[in-house]
Amino acid sequence: MKLFKTAATLQEHLQKLKKQGLKIGFVPTMGALHNGHIALMKECKKKSDIVVCSIFVNPTQFNDKKDFEKYPITIEKDIFLLETNETDILFLPDVDEVYKEGIHQLQHFDIGYLEKILEGKYRPGHFQGVCNVVVRLLKCVQPDVIFLGKKDYQQYLVLKTMMDKLFPDIQIIAVNIQREKSGLAMSSRNARLSINARKDAAVIYKKLLFIKRNIFKKDFNLLKQDVAEDLLSHGFERIDYIELCDASTLLSTQPVKTKKMIILVAAFIEGVRLIDNLLL
Ligand code: PAF
Image (cartoon, rainbow, N blue to C red):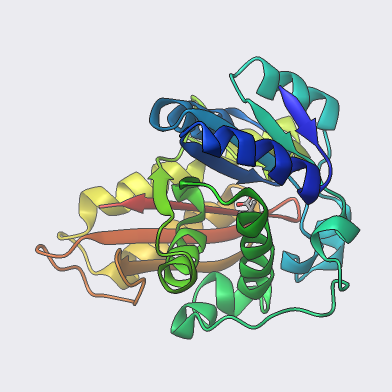
């Protein structure tokens, strides 16, 4: 695996590969890699010739400074995982390399109502930070295809909205959520949980499945209330939302048999904010 810390050296290398007609696949990450990321790499390997991964903990997407400071950094382990999972190139820039004009000179992206709902409502500015970093990374890597996880489903829709306008030639592939045996969605944030909280947090997936089973049998508000009570009795201290949405727009919906729907949850356990979702 080749490692580059600057955009210039990365681009010089990628230009040579592109001239050979090789298809470049890109997996952007913030490190603290787990099997969810590995699934992205594997999909990338299947669908492209060259796997480029970036590790960059993007300061502009953390609306909560403490969350940024506590973000797990496991770079040695990450490099080992990438090397053993067929990654060809790792881009590991620092903040000054990505934000040459400083982290306060951000571009504004029009992502419409997606910025104000669900994650956007609870994490103001988050998606502007995500768009800013992904645009910068895309300009450096200029991939043919980018791989994004469905756990951050709203992020996927936000990036699709932005990229359809600014990078229409780059294909986007969304990869399914990877789960622990318990059902807990894999996330870098899980590393911050105690063993007990990790066990308790698996209740989110159980309740997502419970909603799925009952969506056309019971009133959604009653289902929501049941789920909220169960999360709170399993050690969750705060619930930001439990929503049923249209999967293509993320607008809130009533259960409709003909519609592709998604249930999304965001809740805190041991001060760690977890998100999960289930497509119906
Ligand atoms: O999903 C993530 O890990 C990040 O939001 C991303 C897309 C790498 C941008 O920093």
